[in-house]
Amino acid sequence: MQRVSGPDAAFLYGETRSWHMHVSSILMADPSTAPHGFSIERLRENTAKRIEQVPQFRWRVVEVPFGIDNPVFVEDPNFDIDYHVRHVAVPRPGGPRQLGELVGDLTSYKLDRTRPLWEFWLIEGLEDDQVAVLAKVHHAIIDGVSGADLATVLLDLEPDPPEPPTSIQPHGERIPTPPELLARAAVTNMVMPWRTAQFGAQLMRQGRTLLRFRSRPTPPAQPFQAPRTSFNGRISPNRRFAYTTLSLATMKAVKNAFGVKLNDVVLAVCAGALRRYLSDRGELPETPLIAQVPVSTRTEETKRDVGMQVAAMFAPLGTHIEDPVERLHAIHEGTQGAKEMQQAMAADKIMNLTDTMSPGLVGLAARMYTAARLEDRTPPVFNLIISNVPGPPFDLYMAGARITGIYPMGPLLYGAGLNITVMSNATGVDFGVLTCREVVPDPWVISDALSEALDELAAAAEVRVDEGEVEPAGA
Image 1 (cartoon, rainbow, N blue to C red):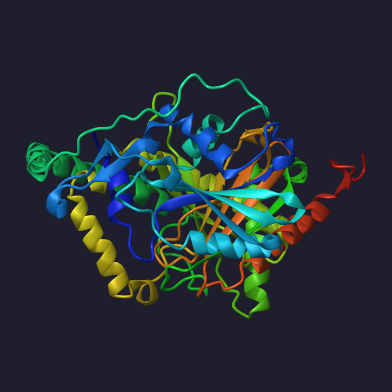
Image 2: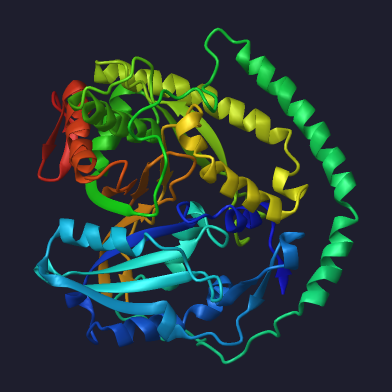
């Protein structure tokens, strides 16, 4: 049994009917490479053998009565692999839109809190005899970087690897009683005044840091500075999903041509697609969209720790700038300032707000925020979330089937009905576009515009594609 950390408890208690705090991804695979055939039984067996290496996949949440302290994780004594690895199909031959619609439906409901917080869905019936696996995992036990690391545990480097030495064992922990949990909470709450004082001192230090950055001629973007767009408003539980893959070589060529970071190119591609989407609808604001960009805070010492270890920076996307190169440079300048401020704020940070208050209050605040419809009545915290996660630069296999793409999905929060999550691999950059159905009914419009935005940057950089290789046009 272990106590859930403050940030992870916030993800548990901040979850509402419309704010789903799980992260997901679609793993596309070619079953023809599986030497022993590919089936739901093989996938279950393959996953079960690796559970011992992923202890959080056996943990279930036990809440403290009245929400007066963080919940605890307990190894589930009734763990059932058949519940967590399921099977569904689309009518043959299912194309990308049919897959996206099904994935949107499956991500539209929350994970069952009475069981370990993850699900795998094997999806069959796809065109070209492909299969897909939808992985849903709660943010309380995973973030983007740890999710990429987790893939190397659950997946293989070859189609027929040696059998792992461990397999699932029928063990578990006793579920603690409410009196036991209340007794632990009483001890924890004894130090709450000290934590509150420490947090107050931290806020004063961070406030001085924030004022220093705000006094700059061009201060970094802040929360609540985003213009209101059709992406922003009340979020429903309903989700829609689209995906695409772009050339990593092209993105690197653009990066090198203009002397920026690869993440700047990712943001610029998203910005170009969003500018076109809003402009076509006569909704393009005069000020730039603001993206919330998660930044990993994992270190060598904490990289194996379970849970969420990310901070947020706010990046202006330059969507008010027509020229794509000027827009890219504006994004680069904005992200440099935002990163510098985020690092300075993190240096003064020793704890989170959730370390100084009961998680029950976090849940109450989240419910009041949505019940009062503050998403529609206050300035947007940000317009959308864009997350860029480096993936493995080598081939991976799932029960013998070669992975051909990993399309990630992050949560929708605070009245922002659009999330674009990106994962790179050896040759491509996979984009997952998750939307609230009522906010962006057709995410494929944005997904299709991503490739057009990259083509625009590649043309400006004068790079060409020859047989899969990208090089300067004058080379």
